[in-house]
Image 1 (cartoon, one colour):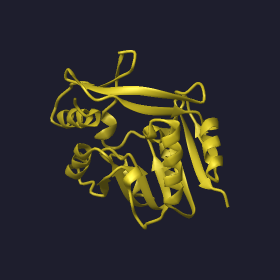
Image 2 (tube, rainbow, N blue to C red):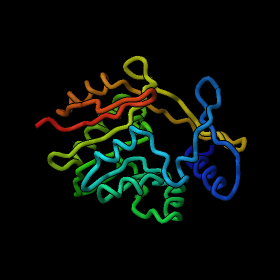
Image 3 (cartoon, rainbow, N blue to C red):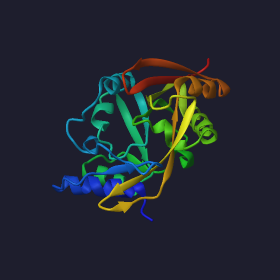
Length: 221
């Protein structure tokens, strides 16, 4: 069985070498939905208004979780010193080949450091990487533990969830190959706010558009 993120990396590498082949995520219903892979390599990074707002609010020592190829690091580095975390080694190699060398190949849940950060960012709905509610609670605890005093977490949160949360089961699909299915949690701001309250932190909606919320999470003082 193929790793879905490895298939994504293969698609990006092929696109960089002139291919027009499309990459898809396949849901439980079997429907293939094309995933925009231009975001991982096109310059300048095609940021939305909310993403531009997130970049402008980032500062100081920045930790980015789920960095993929780090294509938006040119924006983040305007506001601070960035370290990225990405679990897929093939995506990290693409970043390195494009002179983005500050991404570590490590899972946030396994990330051990004495460093503290002024800003932690999660783009692309990466708050969902826990895959379920219990692991998302652990993720929030982990992120809070990595913050400096007065630090903050900035999240691009998808508006897909119409109830408290929905667990999407998705798999990558490329050139006839289907990747291993992974769970991705889509969660509402209200339900995420409850999780934050359980962990002595507070959530604020900074802005929203038709697709996403820009969320800020800070520890309660």
